[in-house]
Amino acid sequence: MLIIKGGENIAPREIDEALLQHPAVLEAAAVGVPDRHYGQEIGVCIVLREGFACTEDELRAFSANALGRYKTPGHYRFVTDLPRGPSGKVQRLKLLPLFEA
Image 1: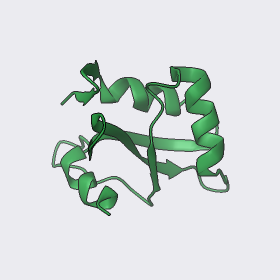
Image 2 (image 1 turned 90 degrees about the vertical axis):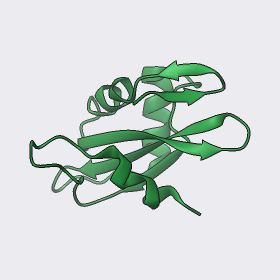
Image 3 (image 1 turned 180 degrees about the horizontal axis):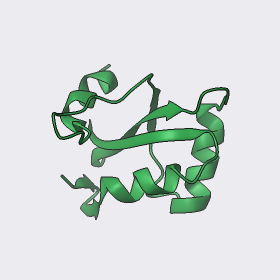
């Protein structure tokens, strides 16, 4: 399920893989969050590694360096785990309520 930000198609997996390069990130899952300016903005749920700490600002700077400003997520949520289906695949649609105002 592509994220369409300002007419550009962005693969959530690309965002996930970039964030997984950060030493504090155990898991990451990006979703398209409704946005009145761009159509969709990038939201990402992060599971931190045990014993590690990381702030939203640190991840934002890391993302901007790894992905460029346009693909840097606008919304971050730190979670203890990601919802998975029977096959073990992350169920991204179940993450959307975390980004509702």
